[in-house]
Image (cartoon, rainbow over all chains, first blue to last red):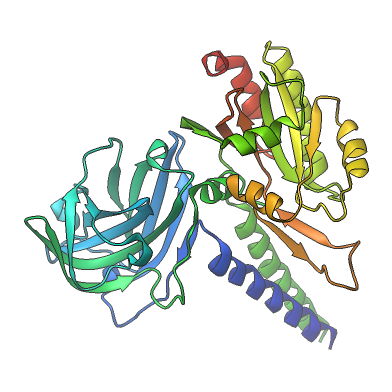
Length: 202
Length: 197
């Protein structure tokens, strides 16, 4: 009987700990697994961290690895920082690690990316962005001084099939979205994220 | 039978260790902001209330509550150590402790609590919307556990342990974990003089 009670207590503790992480942590997005997708297209989680060089690092992990494949498949990181920015890295590792950065003309109020055409402008105004493939995923790096700490901030990651036609980014397929299945997009201040990253234990 | 019980306890111990390990393995970070973050005039004025006669000093700000038994005393002891470390490098630095629990933390309690960590640590007490705005400026969260009509005295508050180093112009320059990273900041006082000129 006592053992059963201990077990129940432990499961409650585990449940509450993970529920807190999923629902209330601005640092991470825990994505639902979708086994109908090719492993490399299935986003498992997005985590943030501060690098020793003082950069904000977004790590996107997928369920599998894609060495080659379609050239038009991308891992897309979307960041709301006053405006909406899109960071694209080819999923195909053989294609290299060149990062494409666009400012997207999407309303910040409703900026969820969908299977659509989005008017974009290549973004060169700030240096220091980077991206690289890692095992089963990618890391995107943005400079801390690019962020507006007084404004709302949010991020999401997608796997997409996309192409650029003039000033239009044509997203012909959204395979997966990290926040897919979440009731409402989470907005928080960039300062709240930084605060959490500086003192992860409360 | 006894062996079976032992196995269960062993299993539970492993699970508990796993939970504890995964929760504490996230590292804290000290961030020196490449572009200082200016605070609004209202916030700067509020901060100066902690030390009204010291407008040209740097300030270390942390949030907590006087009934806190573990994190806050250690963080305030670290702040006190940092103020001494700054003084030995000719950096004028004061501390401000902002209560996230004004219902229990009266001015009298806060005054006596902060004084026990040294005369250079003042306190700030806001209520209602003022407190929410102040917390939001610094991205601070506070979660109240087991606080209800029947328990208004012995509840626990979970809050962020970040501290903010603010320059005399009212700009956030460094954010760090007051629990873990105080030694980094003391080192910064010694080795990063240009930040304080």
